[in-house]
Image (cartoon, rainbow, N blue to C red; front, side, top):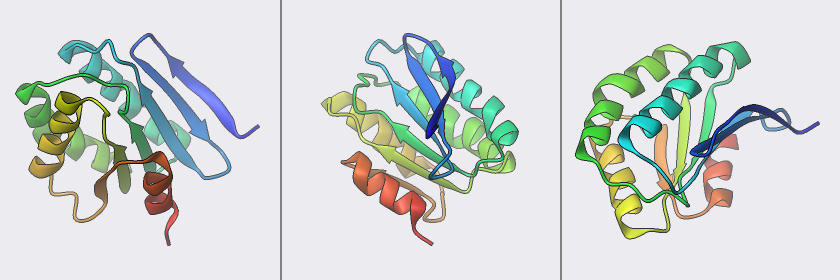
Length: 132
């Protein structure tokens, strides 16, 4: 079995890809600041349990725009995720303008040292995560 479902809600589907050894987060369009933060907290709970160091963060369907989220991701969530073992984080930009802008704001605020990168396609994001 390639994918094992770890969590499912109307706002987030999180699974573990056993073949590529990565967490795959697929965000739904109906997001609030609270639901997005709760989803990222869920990711934090499974990172150490799965002993996984790569996150494919698919935000293509997401339509959000909160400056508070960018600040929270940069100053709170990302340092905790890194401490929990996250080494590579590839984000697929939202197709929606505001969703894309929100993700770009987060990326601009986080010093991911080249390990946090945004992409326009899932294939490109996956390729970065799997590169040696």
